[in-house]
Image 1: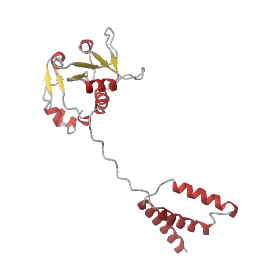
Image 2: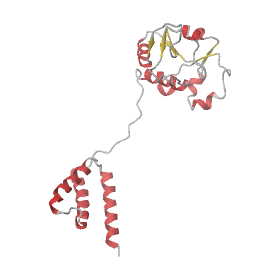
Image 3: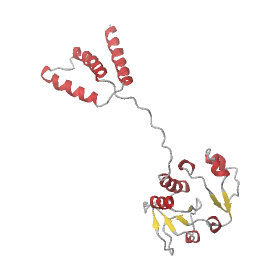
Image 4: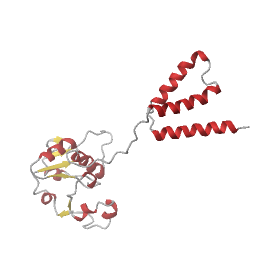
Length: 216
């Protein structure tokens, strides 16, 4: 929940009571969600002040309700004038039919009919992620990328490389030397080297050349 900016957690008749000492370590630092969690005896009490209640489940036999995706539900919740609730069932059994009956809408996702089981965390993250798209959450900072090196720096590296290859006969036969040189240049220019990458590669070439020169 906290990953995607959700902090209001309502628990209905927790199996192991509340507060639960095992919840803290499992929450991995999301203590604020636990500290402000509200506990209710029944689902009806928990959603009494919500204008729209969504039940996360597969279609239930005998229950006829609108069915939407997490994306559609998130858009509706974000645009609603008052608070809504997304209801998740227990890990082992999910929501029962009476629970679903309290909701106005069912949330489900297209899923493999041969294996339609999502655990509780997976269901929560699907809905929370879609909801987060409607909030001003800060994206993780992108890694700072160095700009491509000037062409002169590239030419210096390329000249060093070809200067090492030519005495070794790499560009022979002469009739194909121009094509080989062009192919080599094309291959290396695709990398868009920055100055650190060029300097590193030139260091490799210098080391190889020095090793070749001192060999007996």
